[in-house]
Length: 155
Image 1 (tube, helix red, strand yellow):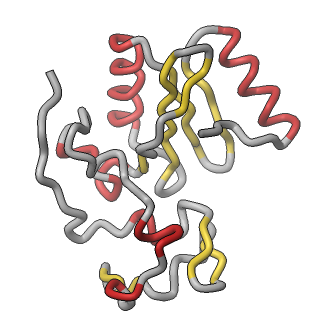
Image 2 (image 1 turned 90 degrees about the horizontal axis):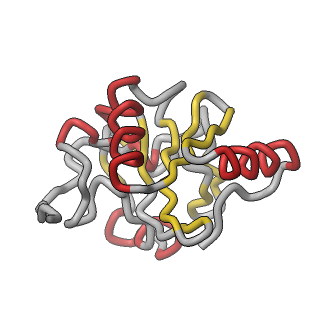
Image 3 (image 1 turned 90 degrees about the vertical axis):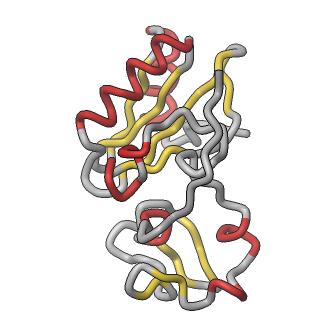
């Protein structure tokens, strides 16, 4: 049974801090280059923020049906779970982007256990490297995509 949450970002600005590779009003946001409009854990252009990517981005921790516990908020777990619907051979794929050098081990362990119990697959990041958690064929395909520089997931 899904729990329903009424969550808000609070002081979390992980999506703006350079961990997601996005572009906002011509500024390329990358690791080491946070959004210039994120000031003191607040968006200085919130009312006029662009639709893409700001208004359209949905954090997996924020969605009402999120199974993620409170302590998995991105700024506390050091990871951003994308709230997208990716599948591989009919199985749902979760994607965790590191918000820092690596997700906290407790958070990564929780996600792997969740993936196993719910028959889901997981792609996660440590540093600049990407890893796959799931059956060997899934791991091999993701490794090959990484090697070739291809997109790891698609809508």
